[in-house]
Amino acid sequence: MTATELHIDQELFEILASVSDPEIPVLSIVEMGVVRSAKLVDNIVHVEITPTYSGCPAMDVIGDDIKSAFKAKGYEAKVDLILSPAWTTDWITPKGRQALEKYGIASPLSAEVDKEALLGNKKVVKCPQCGSLNTKLVSQFGSTACKALFQCEDCLEPFDYFKCLK
Amino acid sequence: MNNNLIQYILGIADNSLILGQRLGELCGHGPSLETDIAMTNISLDLLGQTRSYYQYVAKLQGGDATEDTVAFLRLEREYKNVLLVEQPNTDFGYSIARQFLFDVFHLALLEELQNSKDETLSAIAKKSIKEVLYHVRFSSDWIRRLGDGTEESHNRIQTAINDLWIFTDELFHQTDADKAMVAEGIGVDVTHLKAGYYQKVSSILEEATLQTPTIEYFQKGGKMGIHSEHMGYILTELQYMQRTYPNMTW
Image 1 (tube, rainbow over the protein chains, first blue to last red):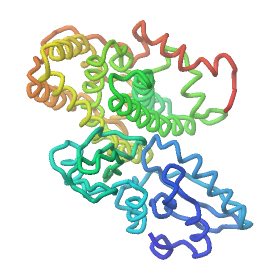
Image 2 (cartoon, chains in turn brown, yellow; image 1 turned 90 degrees about the vertical axis):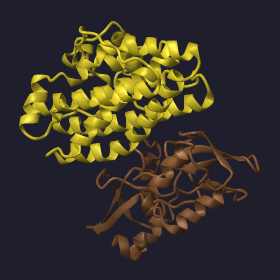
Image 3 (cartoon, helix red, strand yellow; image 1 turned 30 degrees about the horizontal axis):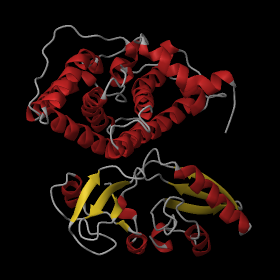
């Protein structure tokens, strides 16, 4: 999401865009769609973030990282966790998706196709290493709550697939 | 302070805490790396959901209450989870059967809780439901694989289903707090979920070539704070640090 779409002041937006997701360092928290709002009120920046998964252990770190990023620019920040509306993989930006693929994580497919992929019914997840569709599901759950584990049957590399959450 | 609301939330949240704790015991002990990761991922989702509920309870309680005091400083009788979730990980079949019998209920409950008049509960339900859909898929899939697998896996998952069946009826038991919250449009009337639950469970058991147990006596008590002999051991481990070093923080 862009600064305009989120109604965030450009300067604050850039500071937020400099904070990366601790689990996936190539992605900023803005590209992840985790930042929901930011407002400057009485010299304090109020930031609202939403977790990808309820148990995401990265949220506390993200909160601290946001505070220190603002502090470095001379702002005091207050971070609130909101649950509604619930995060969806649709909020990952196109740039974020590219970054995921480049990092070796297959980006989420649409909800319908995702179901087929996670039931192991259809070969629809593309290997981020060699681009082959000849991949198989290894586990519906992967290295973090948001990912499933796949393996490419052509280049044999295992890889993570970012599960669709809608 | 609305005590009925607090008791109602604990009735939902404690299920997630105790099942999350049980699944956490499997960390490093799952039968394969993939199932180990899956079950601890599910544990993490459940604990995350528990935190959201407990933060809300702490806010309602006010004073010095925090999510940690709710989680760690209650006595056994004050936990309101159903007996099903405290049953031990006897073998992989039992862990899967327990998960399956709970997941089908959990999903149906959250589907209704989304419409709660209470905004926080509705928000937590909407968030959790996306995660629980994955849980149901995982446990149903394993019920089919074990049931329709080898003679050994078939017999063991059938035994686990038979043994745990006695705890399913409690899922639909209503406490006074539940009834009060249903009347206010905040709580879910679980008695309405019962028929759909047994239908869904039976159809998956049938696909898995398993028998749906028919028994007339069911056990209940957890929702009223009367737990099985397993609960004390779970709490001993869960609360160890806070009881040994009161108010410690990381």
